Length: 82
Image 1 (cartoon, rainbow, N blue to C red):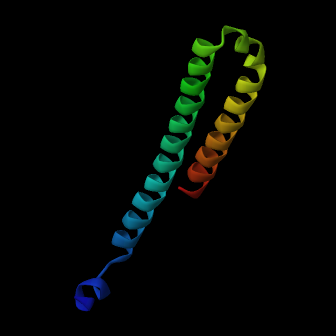
Image 2 (cartoon, rainbow, N blue to C red):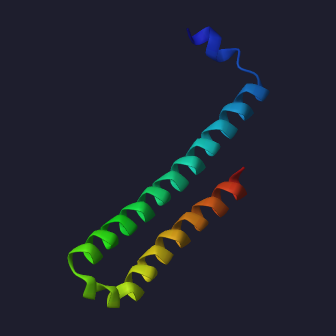
Image 3 (tube, one colour):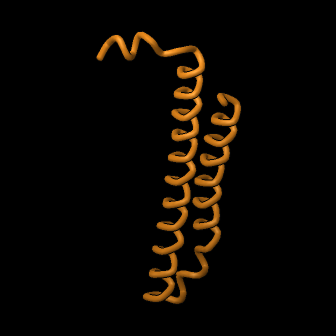
């Protein structure tokens, strides 16, 4: 088994490195999308229960913006690493 790993070429290492970075980037963006979906879902539930909660929409937008900035930073860092 170790002889197979010892025979890895430089190209194989670069391909594995690129796949791992792409997986990391995809995972970061997927988690950010799930986070935005959860924020939106819970905000809509709150509006359904209490329509006057619409006055706090600014706070929800700020939270969503912070999630988006985190996703953007993950994307830029991943693009820089690739």
